[in-house]
Length: 262
Image 1 (spheres, rainbow, N blue to C red):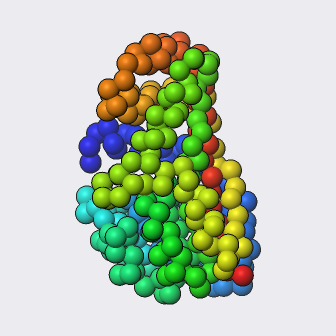
Image 2 (cartoon, rainbow, N blue to C red):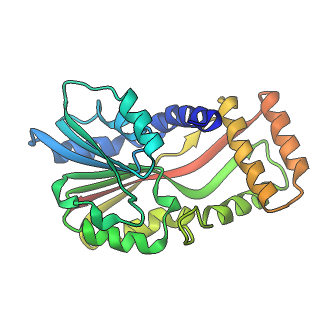
């Protein structure tokens, strides 16, 4: 994998793990307290971060299916996957879960999950996903960006940066259609509330002392600024200086979404 991407994913995984809402785990385990096992499908499984988080935190024996469009990420995951006594079976599928949802037999699974995945999707995906999962027992999507982040100390251009970032989040992410970006949680809640009891719980990143992570996120901001051909060098210099002086805080708002069949 690309060195920068791999480093970013490794940094993200530890932040994501500490940010996920723990109440959701209680709700899932309570729902399945009388089940000896559960069948789980992980959409956009990537290198396996969602599996690594859940496998030891779910109380039941588990049968996992992993779905991703990337051969590279899936190969990396398969090579490095770690098992435990609760993991009874795993299988990997190369499927485009954005454009070919109907190729996935969701009725085979108790729990459908994914992580940091919804914001890149087009709006029409959500209606189709709900149609295929109207009877699914539990749907759980973690770490959905909600459109708000802030660096501290403050700078006059902070709001402008957030607006530019959010506009980019709603651009085409290589799918051929505009992504929903920060609206993803409100959209999935709306489509599932007719068939499921829904929960939206906080999973905010607070990485005020993780200056390496802040530096990586600042690079994403810089790339978006350059893509839009904007002159925000003063903001970037101010932020980088604050990080180097270890005087920087960074908070980004995420939500975890859970739907439990009524």
